[in-house]
Structures are given as structure tokens and as C-alpha cells.
Length: 276
Image 1 (cartoon, helix red, strand yellow):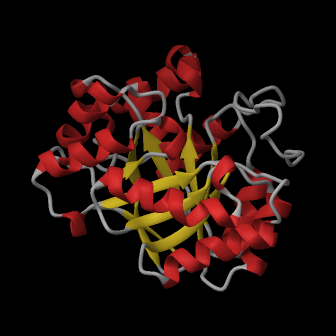
Image 2: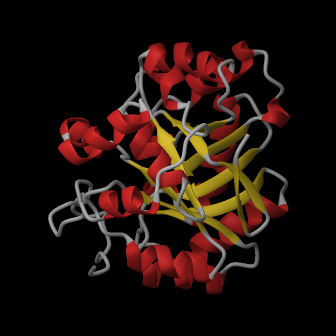
């Protein structure tokens, strides 16, 4: 199992994401992927499927200690009087007494960042969380989180695919030993018809999805999340560690970035993104 080392965390380089996945598909796919090589499962309170993730893990027969499990606290639960209780509820749904990685899902200026980070650290001290991190943070917020936290920040989970330039936050993350976890790797399906990526895929006898996932994990300190409700595609998406992209091919994918590449920027949640 290929892993990314990040401030004490050993994160499987390929994870299975459950965003926009209903409970029935989640309960079906989680045990399937765990029995087909995946060891990293990603969910969140707002996905409304933590209970199905828990059921799927239990049904898989895979030891809990062999699975890297991530969930995220939703912004409404950031206040100190809600944070710990919401985590306990997540643990109950997930049928576990700890998660490997707990993230703050989006920035929320209504609650002081120091208070949010303190709650993450308390979860670590209580033994309910092995590692902590953030999600959808720009460079400034990520560096503030690093400075405020006693426990190291393991990752910043962000939108990352060939059409978006994340060089600023990537460089800052590497400087602080923080991994980048990439979501929306397929750019909501846009990469699947990209002629440049198709040509690279044909050269390697791989799918476009495999090439994009390989491009991500071949970058230093980047974890890729893959999400599908199709079992055959899930198996294919895991087959990315038996080939390597050349420097020219890596560069060709990087060259697809464009100013309009960002797809996820919900008003009221998104920070001021870093300029490329």
C-alpha cells in the first residue's frame, strides 16, 4: 500500500471518497473497495452517510486498524459547545471509537480559528482522533492553523485536478510537512473527454481516470480521492501504481490549468482563494 507521510500520519495515497453518495451505494461500495485493495475511506458529517460507512466497514471483515478513516466536522458544529458532541455522534455512526483523521470541513469565521483548532487538539488528547487537518483552506488560513495547533496538521483537503492551479497552497503545505488531499480529481467528469489526457492514457494502455489519479499521487505529498458507484471502475481506479508518467506527461497535465478551472466555491463558505 503506497502511503504519504505527513507530520506523523501515514496516509494511504489513494482514498475512496463518498461525497454525494447515498446510503445504499455507500453501504455497498465501502466493503467492496476495502476487499479490493483500498485502505482509506473518506466521509463527512454533511454527507449524511457516516452510518452507511460504518456499516460498510463492519461488513468488509477488514480489521479496523488496517483502515485509514477520515471524517469532517461541519461548520455548524465548530462552536465549542457543539464540537465534541458532534464528533461523538460521528463516532457512533461510524461504529468506531476513533477516526484516523478529523478535518475542519470549510473555513467558518463566525467561530475563532483558535477555538476550532483547540477543539481538534482536545479530540486528539481524548484519544478519539489520531491525526487532524483542515479542508478548503487557502495558504494564509492553513499557515494560521499550523501555528495555532499543538498537534501537527496532517493535511489540507482541497479541490485539485488538471484544470486548477494549486501551486501556492501546494508549496506552502510542503514547507510545513502538510499533505494535500485532492478531491474532485475528475473535475466533475470534464477530464474524461480531454484530448491531451486521452492521448497519454492510450500510450500507457490506461483509462483517463487512471492517468489523472496517477498524476496526483506521483506528485510529492499528494493524496488522491477516487469516487465511483461502479464496482468495475473502482477496481480500475486502484490500478495506478503499476505505471509511471514521464516528466513531459506530468508537465502536459499541469499545463491544462486555467484561471477558470475552479469548480467548487460555495458562497458563504469559500475563503479568498490564492491567486495562481
